[in-house]
Length: 293
Image 1 (cartoon, rainbow, N blue to C red):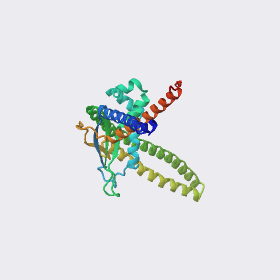
Image 2: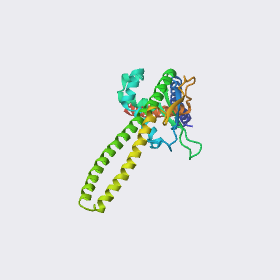
Image 3: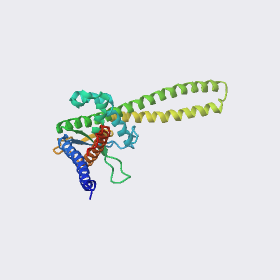
Image 4: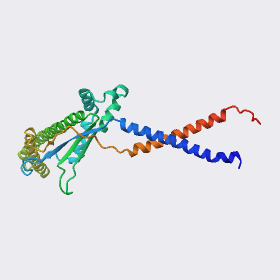
């Protein structure tokens, strides 16, 4: 058996050792990263949606938008750059990230750390009656404090939005009534003038009757809007209430080690391929020496 044939098993063993070394190095690096990476803590607060206390038959609700849509709007308001930048500055959040990243990237990181979950009702016919907000942080006390602030902001934002919508509705109806009142005055003057000269035309009488009915309807809406505004100001309309405040998290979020190991093995394999290519190029580039007898 020739020397070349004797070297074949040795070469195979050498290759196996080569790839095993790189894969093992990747796995060990991923394990070190898993151990060294800071743990993440999550604090959560639950918010109950309390329905209007006065029966809707007495005072119709002015805010009739779908609750999921309203929660989505509230979430966008809370996650706005202005609001989050203010919270970051107030609590000195993401101190390390702010030294290396622009503020927009820091704000995006905070948005990823904020979670809102709407509790689905048991039956599809039931209304949503609660939701939760949470915040992730490497410091458990920070997670609790920011969650408290976010929950309070959601409650306050809902109050302000409802009051604003009720006021806008009230102002709109007042404008409608003023416009209808002015049109009624003109039509009634025209009717009086027509009666002085004989029988008023039927179209003028019909126009007057329509305006009167429209005015009555708008007046009823206006009175209901005033009652709804009173409910909102006295906070006995639909409102949010924090029923389970944020607590100091005692345990970190569970992390799976397998993704770290898989990525580490893949990174080690990739490093081995790159090292093999570099070694191959280096060997090809070496000047060849003459074979000796």
